[in-house]
Image (cartoon, rainbow, N blue to C red; front, side, top):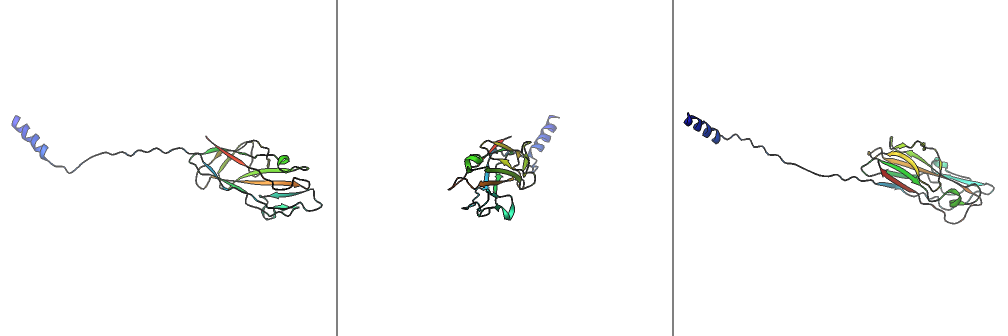
Length: 185
């Protein structure tokens, strides 16, 4: 009996099956990035003045082709374009550096922003911010998007600017820095 078991085991040992199994692994880590970018970062109306006899001139990037009224500045319909280029949804705050009185001076100046998703679902607006509604720029953070989407094709926000320049405003070069802050959610 021992010899039979021995020959059966030797026979199994020398059989070649042609099957080899081996396992490999691949590991990596994807880093989380929060990154936003102004793809259109400048609004420039150039030089101009309030048309004589008017209390002010209005410049409004959201108003289409006739976006300068009662003045002779160069029209600008671009607005500012902000894109989420990271790999996370974020909340988004927008802040001006100054308010209308500081920016323009004069009687009854106006300096405002409005916000519009350029691609559907780019921004889940905060309850205090409604799309395409103008809000005063006042030098404080405004939560615009509770969720600023990262998905390609749904990650772009337009910021339009409207200013009313009084006939007795400051003169010379006037400008402001607009800050966008993204926070991971």
